[in-house]
Length: 92
Image (cartoon, rainbow, N blue to C red; front, side):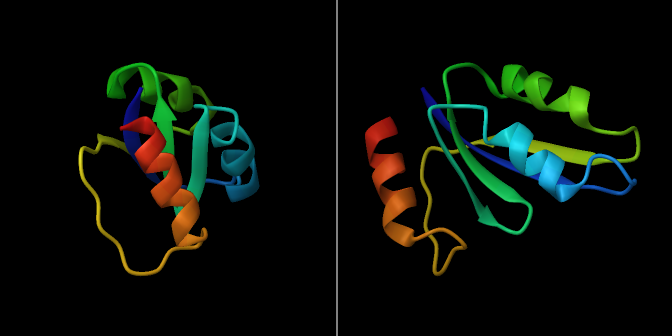
């Protein structure tokens, strides 16, 4: 399993942020939204495979970036800091 950060810009009427939340919440064993349009996902495949799991929900005008992360540091997040720390440590 690898640690990924997924970030996106939704520029059309579909999907909505709620649609994205529901779609992303089904991916990976450990996941959660850490900033407004940034998710942490612990995923067993590659960044390309994760992108391909997300891409079908997006419109042609939407933007997506999937980053595999080896290290991370943060100040405050939308999720409880300990939940991301615990997920990160489990994936390591």
